[in-house]
Image (tube, rainbow, N blue to C red; front, side, top):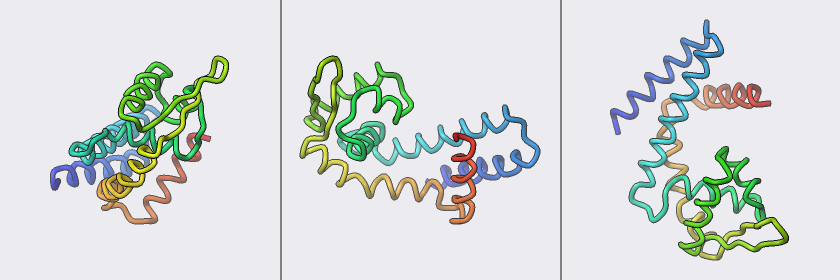
Length: 153
């Protein structure tokens, strides 16, 4: 855990120093590293759970936007439609989501068990997220969030 914090602090310092005179390629590299480390931390936090962080995140997105079709979920998760299809299949087997076909479109919603799982694991996700960005001040987090939103708009 301490090793992860030191690594995150190092990445944060690299990002802040790089942003002062960075090219877009350098920024891209730093953002990729940050995302990779964040994902690793989240997956580690979910290692002892019944589902992975990726599965939890999919359930969370489904809950926020249900009913939604596979392409919408693919867009929300920034993964391919094929990945979403496999993910939905695993979640269906676990009785966490259900699908209904309407014409050529398959709509996905949470089951009662899926709703309970999202609620049960919410604090795990929040705690892991806070641990990852815990050494950042609230202002730094807001600045980073604002810059990322601006870059993606």
